[in-house]
Length: 125
Image (cartoon, rainbow, N blue to C red; front, top):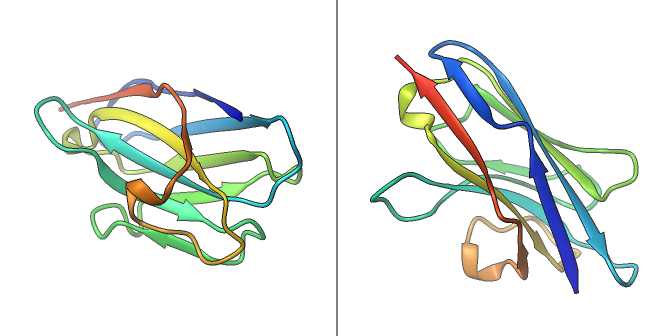
């Protein structure tokens, strides 16, 4: 079992930056990729970014490439999402998730095993 807790969301003006954090607590030692997804009101959940266990492999949605950066902490159980040049269309609840895989990170939500509750990001125009 795993527990994921996100933090760092908030209200920011367009063009601003936020840094989201997510820490995973697992009952057993495991290797896993971590990802960020978001869901805006009235829209389906969408992939944002993901990173492998080692941190050597990352994937991004086209809509955030060049603006967002995903990284993992040295302890491997924390993932960060640095979000720059934020746009109003980035407004959503951002959730992190864990995928028990040794391979490259997936962009598909059903591949992930555990999810956090999410943190709200609101970008004003």
